[in-house]
Image 1 (spheres, rainbow, N blue to C red):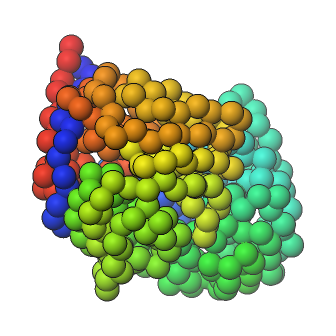
Image 2 (cartoon, one colour; image 1 turned 45 degrees about the vertical axis):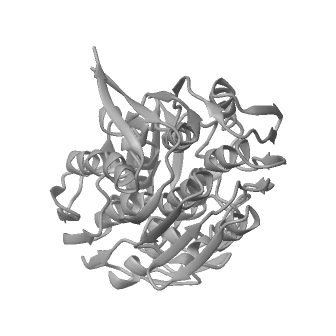
Length: 419
């Protein structure tokens, strides 16, 4: 049985919504539990499909994993298994983040090439080259990343691109390597800082989190810990954009507004009143949004994960906007679905030009990934009539209690099952 959403347009969103822990952080923190024998507890976990999927990956590696409400308890054995097979990892990209911890703890790893969102090529070259510099041998064999190391030693590693995944895997391998490792051009995302903080709580010696240079002094052993996941800035920003698109008034709780500096500035440019608060922010849009140009870049730039929401906002804004995608090459397939909804948009390579229209028109649309799915729902909120959004399992992978939260803000949305 597949499901789809029916989204009724014309509703102004008002009220308050709380976000849970960051999807882009919790899965890596769960993987980091492999680095220490004993029980690690991760709190403020979001209620999304990827958390139990990662739990299954860890169980396949010999861990005992308990999920209860917003808490995950991971008990890692003295000798974890090192083979994460295809059935466990095929469904989501983040499963590859067990590679670094397995190389560190077991000195070997076999991880099936992961699945996940259809947003373009995301090769593992940087992950492998970083592990090789630490002393591991790494190849792709029979659909798996295979890595083995008799000894891990510190190294100076410069990433050709500030890849979040490569930074995380190299970081988690380096914490148990002999000597000092320096990662230059490292990713600066708040989720990287969250991982650094947890690793240090476990006894690692990592400095420079949030900067372009991470320095790791290897230690012999880590200990389990309890760590609270930071709030999800992408989910929070999604609700902020929804407020702007629907000319609404929404207060978002549970996130550090400083993690969204550029995003909130773009909403201000669109004409929204944005007020930072202690545990979040408020967005009030009184008039039709104004056109805004967006260019996706690694943090602290505009997040590629919010590109579909930016396109949605531009589609109903007054004027012409240009969206430039600098991170993934196939993310503009979302534009094709927006055109089905009446958006005046065209793409040329890494650019999309959108001429805003006063209102979109309802149509059946299909989501290709987590953020595209959420973006299509937001578009449905400002479309005339009822929009059908299909392949909504993507949304369930990244947005906790999505329907309940949207209804709580006054949105009209129904989950419908079809044979």
